[in-house]
Length: 193
Image 1 (cartoon, rainbow, N blue to C red):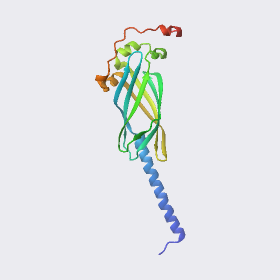
Image 2 (image 1 turned 60 degrees about the vertical axis):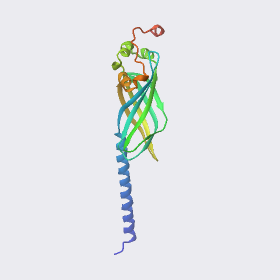
Image 3 (image 1 turned 90 degrees about the horizontal axis):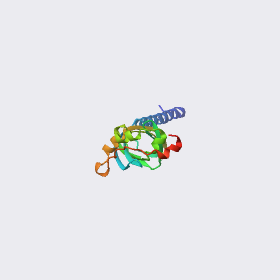
């Protein structure tokens, strides 16, 4: 028995609809894998660590369990020390996230610790003396692209201490912080502090 033209159209329509649903389900599943990717602090390097300047790079390991490789097209991070906002970092360098694997994302953070006094961290000396109390919180948003597909505002949040950064860094390249006994507040008197 031969199919009529209408039956053939319905059959092809069903096949095409099924393919679209299947592809859509697959892509949604892959996005979910990426959205639920795990992150952890994988390493660090310290360029400067003093009362006048802190500069370090943390290496964030992102584990993608999906079949889609994607490119990070933009990174935006807000950096906090304790609960105090310190700075924003934006990076538009393209980073390739491998499918079914792990990728390291570097993030360089630089700030002047004395500026934290103005921001309200008046116990800076004790925090720098005990690096386990120097808590750094990163709240970031990343944008991904895979072909014509994009994902914006992937949230990434990590919390770690300066002590953890020092322990992850190569100790032969880093001088431990010197104890802080006196912080000159002279420049802040005009601000009423």
